[in-house]
Image 1 (spheres, rainbow, N blue to C red):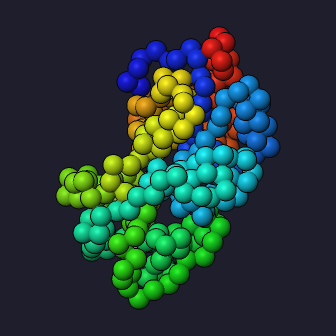
Image 2 (cartoon, one colour):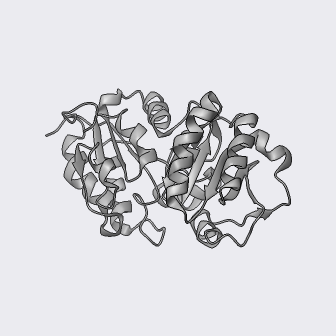
Amino acid sequence: MNSSPTPSGRISLMVSDVDGTLVDKQKAVTPATAAAVSRLREAGVPFCAVSARPPRGMKILVEALGLDLFGGFNGGEILRGDFSVVEQHFIAREAAQTGIEMMRQRGAGIWVFADNEWFLTDPDNQYVAGEIRTVAFQPTVVSAFGDHVARAGKIVGASSDFAMLEACEAELQPLLGSGATVKRSQPKYLDLTPPGTDKGHAVRAFAAHYGVPLDEVAVIGDMHNDLPMFTNAGLAIAMGNAAPEVKAQAHVVTTANDADGVAHAIEQFVLPRAGGRG
């Protein structure tokens, strides 16, 4: 279960993951979700989102929900709704190079997100087309990543060998130490993001911005990289499509992302606690 076994009775801020949570399988915010977020705001509860996506890849989402504050790169970058930067962090260069080399040697396609662009050397990787649909911008094909690795907000190893990525995750974090945070955002993606930042960091940043105690924050997610949110919140909600180990760390479980899980969670679990009701 969540580190606090009893969920908070008062919620003053809600923070959501994006892919597998806030958007459906078509990568869209459903009308029910948009309406529920609007009702939450009307109740005086701000709503923020944090994603493994690059900030540029969250533009449609920010506009659809009118977000005032959001996080990209698993919390490595915090921005306002007008895309002005509140915080920006980078992966340590040596850690970036070590991580790239290990994942490449084991057969993963390597993507470097830096300088507001997405760089890759292999445009034929099977997951490129799907990522284009997700982030809504095209990658830049390069022969080498060069100096971009010095300013990387995220480096991804993309592979259909999920077991290999899981093994890399376990090996890379101790190897890279304080140079990077290593988490799988999906079974097919192993993400290196800036050190000292994760989605828990984003939750703390959002709470500080709004002056909300962490035990009055509700969070919702579906993947392992969402667990740092769970340990920084008063109410942890897992999606119906979440991994079993993620559900085990939640206070409550909502419906799946293709069944308006965020909208259901807002109505069922968050609104009754807004302003201390319920």
